[in-house]
Length: 468
Ligand SMILES: [Zn+2]
Image 1 (tube, helix red, strand yellow):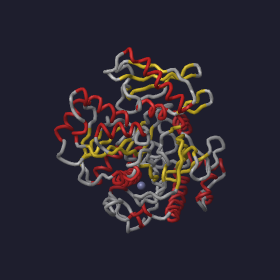
Image 2 (tube, rainbow, N blue to C red):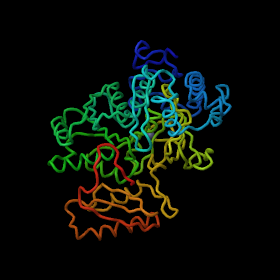
Image 3 (cartoon, protein in one colour):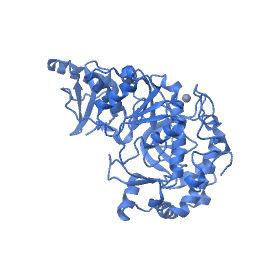
Image 4 (cartoon, rainbow, N blue to C red):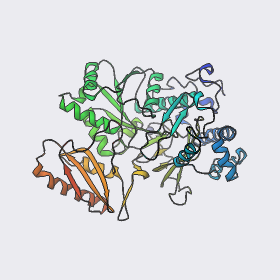
């Protein structure tokens, strides 16, 4: 460990740290400059790759001796810590998927064998939200958590959020990771945290109204719930623009990277909209939108590559695609050790490129954000259909609400959308036709479209179900 690095917690609190920390991280709990939280965000690519390699070597050595799951997997594949001489050597290691962890936890309940230190010694214990497959138990050490806070602080600062701001956390504090890490990071940065928890939406908005104007504020929510709050505000005659929210940080679903969603939220809240993306298995923010990108109609996100090696692979061959081309994302989390993620396949479809951004960050850009999750992709008559594409079209049609559902039936997809309250039922067929034409222009597919009265589709405070 380098003495030049100053951490949020003393070693007495965090325990002996495992990860390699370069001197450039400096003071991790205070902003480095008016624009950047950390000098690392501006390092040349060559230096970022040196840090990746040093971290990878340290991680693989530690994991090989501490995690029975990985030790077994790597022995079968014939790789050892000595295999890692360059970053390319990572490709010799086997890819892991969430199904592998599921199987491992089923075979050795309840925790499985991927943990490096006993689960009860770790700081956080989660159960995954189980949107796909069986829920898994997951954990974070204090060191993992501290690294996540640091990356979140960098990302929130990159949005334009500053110490002294008020943070509205509009989420239910569930037993999966949700916005927990963001909450801790906001506190570490010196922001004031206002949690919603199980408070219903109406009194929550009432509380925001009482506090409006007493401090610059930002809101953390899923895109679905950021939208839901506008709907409820309208019902109780509160203008969301008057609530003092200057920045919205979205997570959990594609938000700022879906232009129609971004523009609808920006107009209704009078705020700038940003994304932060992570996952339970890899933790920490992988990607975040900077101020420069947020000004664009279709923003891209910076990738925190000093803490994550991000491979973009061909979906079939699992070989790397040329830089800048689309592929499936495979992540090695270099800053988490409790349950390591080494070559974890995320099933997100991404395009990553090292190019300059006017914000001054050298961290590469995820082109167009994380708008297309392979998991959610539908194939209709050989055409790929992403829910975010349909969402973008639906939100551009006046008279339609933001709630929609794609229902798979007999190789077709039925699109169900809610109308806004002021639209007469007699106008539904016309709206359906308009949406059908828009989908046809974008995809060449003619899909059946059904317009429903307001309130017909289920509402959620977390992720909306978009495909059935
Ligand atoms: Zn930027």
